[in-house]
View (cartoon, rainbow, N blue to C red):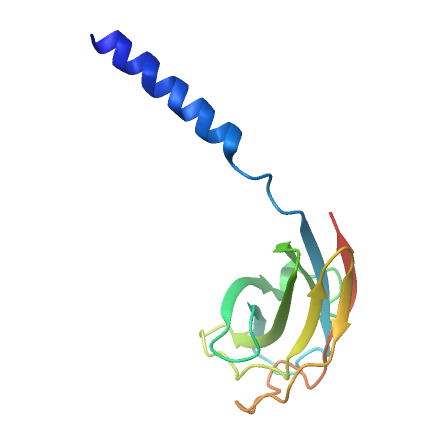
Length: 141
């Protein structure tokens, strides 16, 4: 009886997987920004959100030592769903863990291609990561 139940469960799982819609294609967006000039700068936080309002989610941190050129910092945000608009901002952090306010936001529309768009003003102030965050490259996978 247990073998029959296990075989039935395996068939149900296979059928459910076959009915699952294909995954959406993903896109990557390259961001670049003006370098922060703080003496104790340790790195940057890269944030995103998928709506024009609300809190940003942390995508990741990049240490200054990980950058190809600390005078021209950049970061690639990966795995973004097509059919969405994303907003991005960066912060700077120090070796002691203090983090700046977010930069002015930039945005991109993700469809068959990635297109920079006009982001609304950033009410949170900031600019601590550098006054100019911009989309450096945009490409779909």
